[in-house]
Image (cartoon, rainbow, N blue to C red):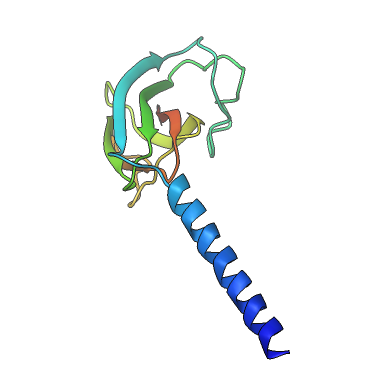
Length: 140
């Protein structure tokens, strides 16, 4: 019985080692590449790309109402061996104030302090996987 247990333990150890090797082989290699580009600003009459949280006037597929401006930045993250991200700066034009932030795509962002009703803010974008999207500041 001892021989059978030893074989079972050896087989289990080999399976675990093979699994760990498989996981290591699947891990991304090389540097993480992060690209941030300006996206077209969406103004009144353009089609809203999302339902803006906390702003009932901005609804996916509907025209953006007068007085609103959506400032966008396109983010592309190609995940390498070490995850990385970017910090984005948004500033509302013409004395407008930030009402909310939202995204279209798989890349998004996180605000680390209150931005609502401020003119400008910094947002961090980070992903553990390949991601592409446009982060918008909704200004009014």
